[in-house]
Length: 221
Ligand code: GSN
Image (cartoon, rainbow, N blue to C red; front, side, top):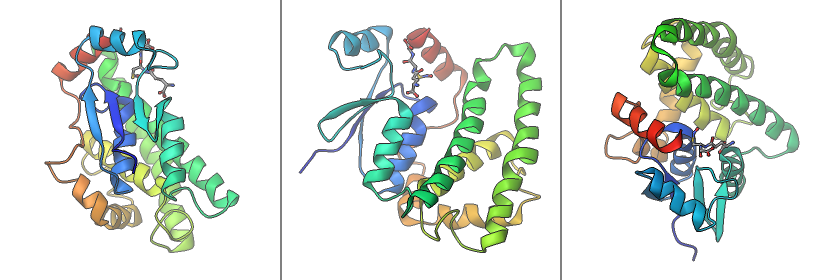
């Protein structure tokens, strides 16, 4: 039997957090090797572990996988989280790419110059409430099902729950105009593997603080 996947990244969310979410949702236990210095990253590079000299890197099934989307695609395919036919996969991919766009904006916010942060935050919240959340409120309303696509759990549900929780960290009542998404949030949060990941003792990472940001800048820039 293959061992547990081993995740190589800093001890923070960044581009690894969605991978942690998807593994946890699929019920896969994983190990983490945290990169704590530029030297740690350099060693992985020198050892030929990083195809494009970048992390996230995940050791899984005998591969050293890089590129976060490729890693997510592999985990989703392996654990039947990408729909039952190409049409369902197409919608799941569109929904996930939307989540990634919003996720990326939130992830980059702490790295923006201090004097632009307030404006950036306002833009993110505006986009969230006028562009993204209405789409999913309508999807749930139109089909009346529990999950976003195909009436079964897919990576789209997992990735949107992650993104919803990130948005709530920025504005805790962000779902106030979206009752079906509120119900969706609690439904998906109650799936046992996800409920476990939401416990404080899990490998889910907290929102970045100044220390985590400073450490990431030192390692990556
Ligand atoms: O999605 C991906 O995995 C890649 N398309 C991007 C990976 C990436 O940018 N990794 C950064 C650290 S994570 N932060 O964004 C990285 O390894 N930067 C160092 C470098 O030399 O590019």
